[in-house]
Length: 233
Length: 233
DNA sequence: TCAAAAGTGTTCAGCGTACACCCATGT
DNA sequence: ACATGGGTGTACGCTGAACACTTTTGA
Image (cartoon, rainbow over all chains, first blue to last red; front, side, top):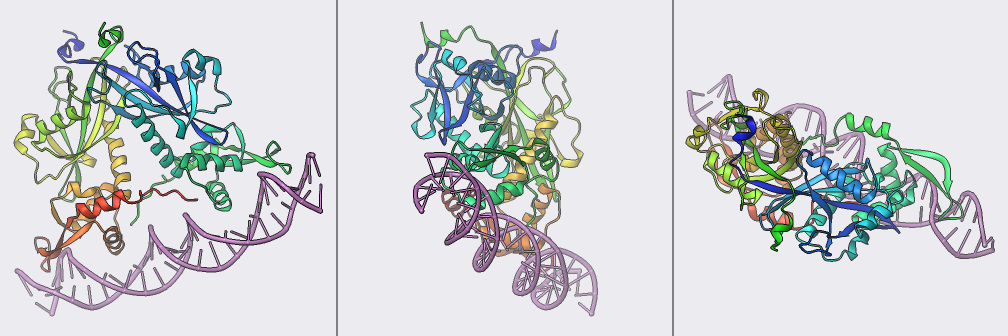
């Protein structure tokens, strides 16, 4: 008797993946949502999602579906939480593993998105979403906020080269509050993960602002060293 | 056509729940593991787990399985992470939602545990576990450490009434490092979630140490107020 | 009287926070 | 010359961290 037979008597479930996809443009944090394609609730606004296939890891499913929608590989993607109420989808029992993704909207492929009637919404203009997707979005936002406090993650939402003002505006958008320019710069620079470039961005001021980029090396050094949460009372 | 029919063509999966169960005794953080009952790898050390049933939420499955093993209801239980590699279980494709639980070992029912050949191990004496269970335990420990820094969660592992020395020993066990007594007390008491009782515990010293209990009211007030993570740069 | 754990305060350094002015440049 | 965003430094208060001695009491 093959091992798999031992498991035969147990219930099997549809397992979906739903992605909370964040972007940043026009100084606003945005969310990418699609029109649902499945018959049930077809056409309603919904997070981008799909079902986990037979021989596919859940992470791979999330990446696959994200790539279908955005045309992007190598996106920052992190598992958020698994939603398992048996009646969360009123059409069938579906367990959903939620992920959140941070993407650089400049690189986003609009054509791919159009196939799913995808649309970006500012966080305070998100339409009603199907099932428990709104709850997922709220949890993702909380997680993103927490994450950006203790780890320099926000970069994923920006183009490769960005000004400190852009970065600050992003943080303000994520946290929904204004920040002091001097303190912000002091803090971010003291983290020592930014590399100052010679070039200036002149698109938003006459004087021009220096461009920076994220220094992956420094970042890794930081992470591999002592963790950020050193416990001492 | 009923909604559920729309979903028929998608793959279905076995969904398991595995619990990392922490306890505290003899000044050590401990983990409860069982001997595996399913044919495949039967008898190996394994986290307590089981399959999610047809009309059961994943959370309920976790609670059900935990109660079967420990005889305890109302345990602190939190979803940890979902493990979805398609080959993580070499017998069949099983997606596992991991939870971690904190239990007061005084209340633990040994009889229930014996039915599963359950055993408590100190964290540095955990035997080899089946599949990816070791990874789950490591993640749970990290989460517990982080959690105890920012939220007074540790109480769940202690009897209802405890001394500050006991609490400190617990924190030392969780974090694997010694803490300064004065700083620890200052910090914990300033959180304002402990209630000092009139009674003393004389079991561990001639002088006796005052007993405290966790004050749920104060705790809730704290949590409902401003969150712990106020972001300001 | 002594052994063993309980209990208690102060000092210092570093970090977060508040706050206001000059700089560079294109029009 | 002026309007617009870019860039910079300091002072204060709080919190975390290091550190040692007295108290109580049963044996």
